[in-house]
Length: 204
Image (cartoon, rainbow, N blue to C red; front, side, top):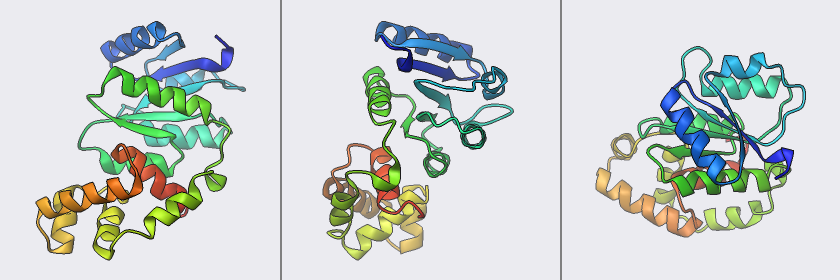
């Protein structure tokens, strides 16, 4: 265990904090728990190791504002944002503000552990020079115009129904296009897909 493997859990729900703390401790991470982004920032960390797991919806400073404040203070650690199912737009915004990943609740324990390990392994990798960016752009080029429109909708954080309405197609057709996009892009999850789109076009 090295100091850089500390996971800072920031969540206003005491039960979530405790269960995440227990889960991560059993997975051999050092864990620190905070009841709010305000409490975390009040510790005045000058140097920060490890990564942060935070909820996107919190009273006071929410997950998006928390990301901005971390950036302002020059604390460049990976941040994994937990979101509710209806919060895709917020999750996408979090990715644009620099979050390393987002995970939709409820999630499987292993999904979070894998996301944390991946974030810790890739923390020194700036997004602009991402090693996969060339491959991602190549995969993007294989999308049909309609698939690209669906991807743009997803990256904007729109739900399937809204994308369907905007494009004048059925939600079921959007689902089919979305599945094709995931397959062509080699994305294992929506967050993975959004991350790839943002890597390919960081100024999106």
